[in-house]
Length: 338
Image 1 (tube, rainbow, N blue to C red):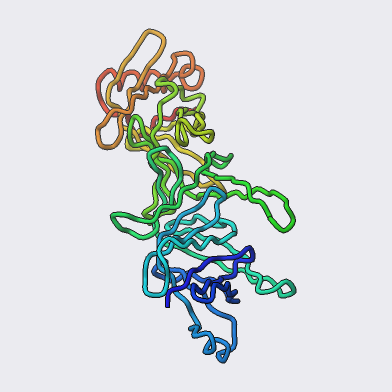
Image 2: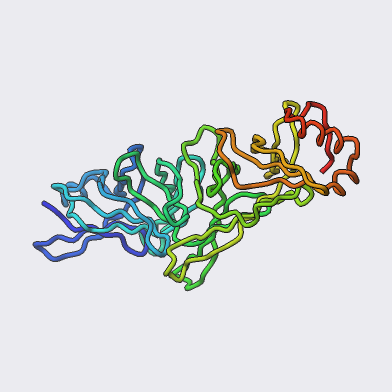
């Protein structure tokens, strides 16, 4: 027999018998399986389950998504035990976005007087951006994966990490509160109109944002790269156009490669390396046109003013200028204090 299923305000499963036209509440707890399927474990005596022909565990199949209120929702597929199109909407909070996982916390109440049960539902997949620079999580690796979309805007905190904040409403108390998710990772500059944010080492998750360079001329003293990035559907009320600022220090390493080192939480430093595509000189400045490791131009020029270099290290300025004019690589041992 096929039943209709749903979830009530206390994250308890219920089913509807078509013949009897009766809604039956099934007390239990939701859990996630390793294959990203959802299961529901009944908390009921075996005699009661036999009476209503219920197993100890009910497993559901369908497609995952997030609704506009950031509830985790499973739209059921057609099977012999479930009806296509029914939705199990789980009310809770996104608590972790680590590496290649999505962790959602729900609180279940089996009756008004019972103690609440906290469950963590973990889905495996990978984080990436969509065509509108929104943060998404693709559940399962497939041609048509389930996609959880964080519909709001993301920001960058003081530790240069991506954060996502959304509002939750607690229905019982009718109060609103903010939830913030922090994505641990680091930035990398690979293309002229894109900037990447790579989650934990070894992870498949990468945000590859489409951006526009705010200013092609960069100055080492400022230690700043600015991009303009649009987030969301252009005609929607959620669309924002913001400035993305990456802060760091410009350095030449001992191999003569130019680096932009960024500091993250707990003093961790990661850098992006650049090759020098062209070497230009002017009367009062020295400019390096940058390219990535794949020999592609990035549309960025690092400008050293004569006054800046002379005030920091006059000898280094003369040496650097001579090396560049001779079209040789920057020698190891040059020290520029930025």
